[in-house]
Amino acid sequence: MDPVRNPYAPGAGQRPPELAGRDTELSAFDVVLERIAHGRPERSLVLTGLRGVGKTVLLNQLRSAAISRGWGTGKIEARPDQSLRRPVSSALHMALRELGPRHGDQDSVAEVLGVVKAFAQRVAPADAKVRDRWQPGIDVPAATGRADSGDMEIDLVELLSDVAGVAADIGSGIALFIDEMQDVQPDDVSAICAACHELSQQGAPLIVVGAGLPHLPAVLSASKSYSERLFRYLRIDRLEREAADRALIAPAEREDVEFEQGALDALYEAADGYPYFVQAYGKVTWDVAASSPITAADVAMAAPVAEAELAVGFFGSRYDRATPAEREYMHAMAELGGPHGAAVATSEVAVSLGRKPASLSPARDSLIKKGLVYSAERGQIAFTVPHFGRYLLRHPE
Image (cartoon, rainbow, N blue to C red; front, top):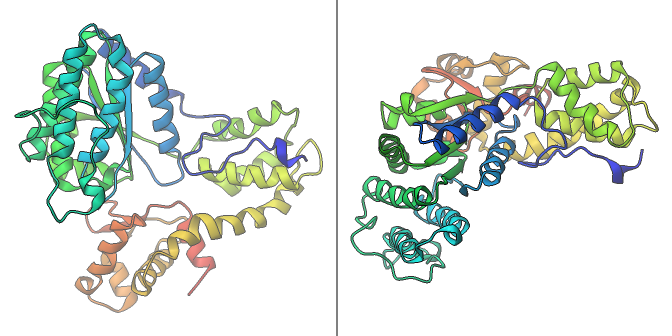
């Protein structure tokens, strides 16, 4: 069939043509926005899940929902080697630019922008890298004595309180979206939790919506014990069969193309309900199929091609980032956990490799920092990428 008309989109964070199976999360967020609009207290939101389940896509969709209600929004992607001062300043500057024109007192908006600028500029040692000496494009003087103490927790609480005040003045709200939240530096995690705690007590119309890997709740809990009650946690998982089928059928129907039931069965078995895989297999199957309806034979012909593309772009690119010692560790995990990538005990990995557990800690910790594995629970380790164990078993060293 015509590849130009191919509706499927297996891209990182790219919205699929049919966002299936996420109605519950979208409805829950609508309730959050509505409650805050009516002055009701509400918790911030955290999405967790493996890679490829559509967390970033859902995060973007939630942001669109906030924008459609007239909220000011900003989004950042956390990095383990970067303070939040610069990205948070940029995100909140954007949110204030969205709300500012609707505010009746432009002088008070300018004062808050000055606080944003002060917050951004607080850390800039003489020998810092150029990116750390970044200056926000805010055409007002930096405020003095507000959000500029150098203590991230104090400064972020003051900053978010002032920004929320602008939104409250016009009966609106602000939502700060943080992707890859598990990579936020420990001091910054503590500051986010403290700020959300303070804002919730004030009833301020500002929420944080984070997305990250399955161990994100443990990261937040290690920072502040009350984080378990501070956020509402939503686990984003594989699509149920009906939703996975809809993600394939609905876009095809808009192009007057149909699937035979056998093709849908084969595609669900191959993709295992993971949204990224649904799009990847759907795209290649479309290109392989000669005509409508798409058949199981088309899927059988497309599957090796899709698997080869995933082996290079989805799995291989991650595997290539690992050192020889880290690869050895992951292969041992795959052999113990099987093709479904079940969590395994770190002690079992040590026994499998004939090593002492302490000697493997550097490799394990590095893999966690690289986002390839996560600690499922104490003494357990698992892959962050679905089907990674299967990939490793098919591609031995």
